[in-house]
Length: 127
Image (cartoon, rainbow, N blue to C red; front, side, top):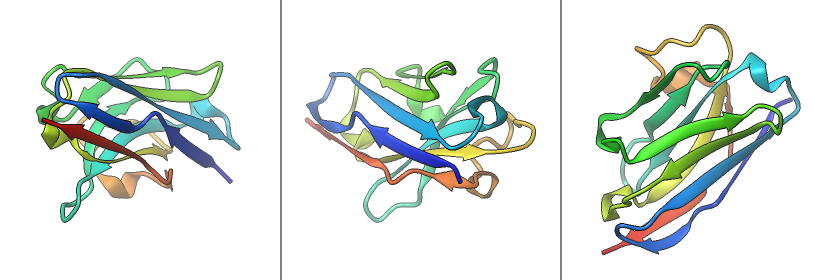
């Protein structure tokens, strides 16, 4: 059984930064591709960024606009999301997710590809 636990969320003012972490356990980290998703109240859960199992390929949603960086520490089994220049529109619950099989840069955002999900960490950005 795979477990994902997010942390690092909080309340910040617009323009500030946060780094989210997702600690994984219960499997061989390098076997899974990973992603960050987010869900704002009343909205669908959407992909933020994805990363291949090797870490060699990353993809981002258009709204990221170069502000976020997904990365991983495979030795520690931790997935990160560095978020800079935060905007009020980034307010949401952020989730990490893991999927198996080949990583597809064209469909990294497709939720059914991900088998395991964390419980989420809340990010609130005020103007």
